[in-house]
Length: 110
Image (tube, rainbow, N blue to C red; front, top):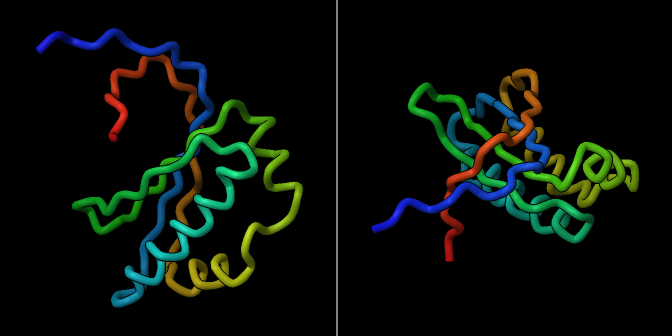
């Protein structure tokens, strides 16, 4: 199999990190999925949610740029109930990290 060429990587990425209350994981995933769907309607390029072997949950959201993300959130909450569901599941929120993509070799799923 040939190695894919990197895409032009000029997207703006935000990495979120949390510790969740035990037993709340399913509700968190459901709420994260709902919020992601709604944010895609506001310009997000989507997200990925990961559970780390360190017990921390990682959310990776991609945007066309920092301004697009800011614009999406200045329009108000996408779904207050889903956001409340996420907040209730979180025992600790770690600082978010913003990333600028430099080289992207991920093969799109589907």
